[in-house]
Every structure is written in structure tokens, then in C-alpha cells.
Length: 163
Image 1 (cartoon, helix red, strand yellow):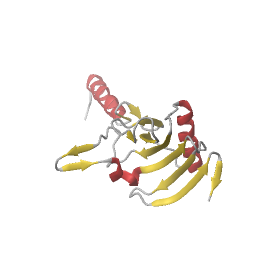
Image 2: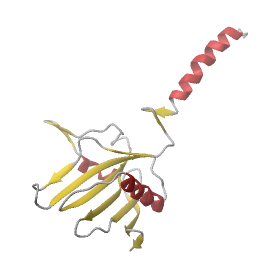
Image 3: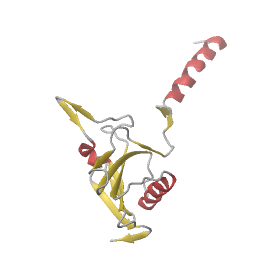
Image 4: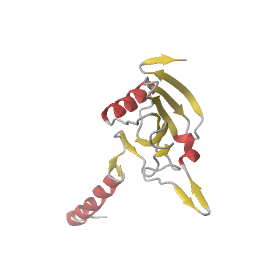
């Protein structure tokens, strides 16, 4: 079968963009690590002027597999994006992207379909906790199977690994 150069050019013009579409999703590189806050998930418990609990939730795209690297990643993120609360406890949770928790996930409180972050603990891979009275940050990082089973857990108080 003989293919003209014009037809070959058209085939290439269509195949190259199609192959590049598979390299990106939602405008993000599949290999790039990125952290962002999951919209509409911040929780504040308590009244202003009293002790408050602030919970914030983040998504990590392409998190590192090494748990020490994961701890360093979330620690660096918090240093570059400080979270503050007066008279309170702070809990930051970091989730991996999955089929059940895609990057554009939003809580759903409709009548017949409730979907909250507590339904996605299998994708929780890191957390940080601290308070005004106990300013040392505590880090928990997890290596989990695709099903959410904890394969390995590491806990740090600041930079010190604790068992």
C-alpha cells in the first residue's frame, strides 16, 4: 500500500497531539508533585475567643513513595504556606489522588448520596498536628496499598522519628 506524503503528514498531525493528550490530565503533568487545598473542606470547631480546632485537607498529586521524602514534602509545604489559628489545635490531612478521590473531588451532601472526606481514609497518606500549647508539630506518614491497607507508618515529632 502506497501512502502519499500529504496523507502521512495528516496522520502525524493527528497522532502527535493525541499522544500528548495522554501525557497530561487536567493540565497537570503526571510526573509533577503538587499540593493544593481541597476546596470546601475546611472545618472550624468551637467559638471565636474560645479554644478552636481547625482542620484543613489537601491533595498531593504524585506523592513520593519514600516516607521520609513525603514527610519533608508536607513539612516544606506548611513552611511555605503557613496555617495559623489563635487558641487552637490544628490538624492538616494530606490525601493521594485515586479513582475514589480524584483531584476535582468535592464533598456531596445530597439527599441520597453522601460523600465526605471521612469516607476516603484509605487515601490519607500524611497528617500534621500541633497546637498553641504544644507547638511541636507531629507528623504521621503512611505507605498504603491501592486498597488503603497500611503497609508502613512513620511518626515524627519535628525531625525526630518516634516509634
